[in-house]
Image (cartoon, rainbow, N blue to C red; front, side, top):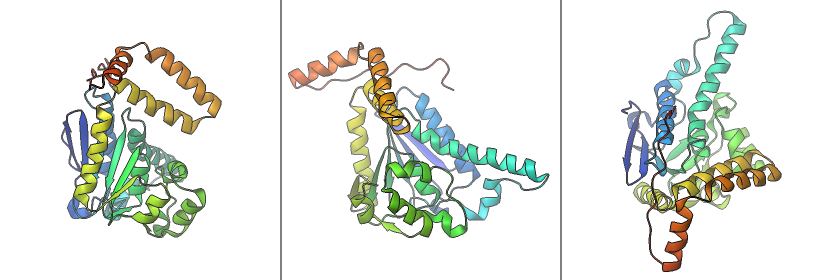
Length: 277
């Protein structure tokens, strides 16, 4: 697929999704929201993809919502007030689904962040599995500065990535959080000196993931996400059910043999779904 606001490539089982509006600081317009959801749903359905790297072209990772096009992003406001509110609610749910496609993508997503990552950018990377950043990166829950309640996932996912008191401070004030603080708090996994070294580090993690059993990686992400959203008892029951269905495959024997012989092995792709949609 080709996109207007993204570049998407796949090589050696790793997909690279690049936000590609550098002249607009990768600000998010209506086309972007449509395309980012479609891109990750397509990658989710592609059995050759085992990991995804998400980055941005240009000076900054993303400036967040494109305020110049906010009318088209938020939708029209004419007509019966109740129906307008219902339409806006459904529109917000559609925007949320665009980023939830990252969270629910069956394979791990590594965000490589440089420069500014504000507003919708925090929603975006909070949906990723792993975050690496360059030294010049900074973060801001920008919505409070434009009188909006962040509504695309930051306030729901970031409590699992940041101490609640810190997140509340960031969300109430909109202040900048620099990479040193973000790393100390566990919001990002690693800091690297430049955009280029950050991107290479993200690919290094992706290559490590792509070399593992795709069944085990997909299962690990599914079980971790389920545990986040359920009780411990529910999570233990879920992983027992998952492994009872998956442990009898060929990957376990391949991995065990490789470990015993200290040799590398390769794993077969997952099967393509008859109905990827």
